[in-house]
Length: 264
Image (tube, rainbow, N blue to C red):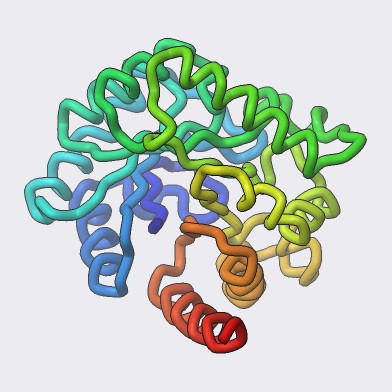
């Protein structure tokens, strides 16, 4: 899954794809580099980000979504939103997936929209919002608690009308989690992968990688991201969400080949 942020304030690539033509070029580059799903976001969810509201999110998103859909009718396009009104407009404009960092908690009506569309739905673990998440990273057992919350949110999604086949889990690296908690989740990914849902992991350029590597520049964290991606392959993760599609695609292919041969 390739990241395309249509925002001025995302933590790593804010402002790079605000213009629809720039976003289209980013999509073209990612498709050429082997991306499987394009993930468009028009609301930054980095710690401290201000929420812009549904109207502004739609205003940013739809021109980009329509342009990419017209240019690449076969592409799989995901939209990163936690608002039902944005999800509804995006699906009507040609989006294929909804990627919800709140797991349906911020806007329960979003689950009804996804159920009616019968589309894939990425259900992510998080706590609070961009303003509060850093104060909510208190766990007794982070792996067990993330799994239990994902199971709870899954139950609510199923009650809202989604089918199990629609669901993809995301442990939410960096969302209400410290560096050590992120690392623990990565070390114990098999616990989540043992559940009956595909797992998506989004490690790309995140601050826990910067903390481990003492690298404050997010764009310089590609090698740390690649190391995390190798661990994801080892654990059986179904998909990773990244900015650097070309390099990470090569990393995935090589790691998959190594683990396949080791299994033999």
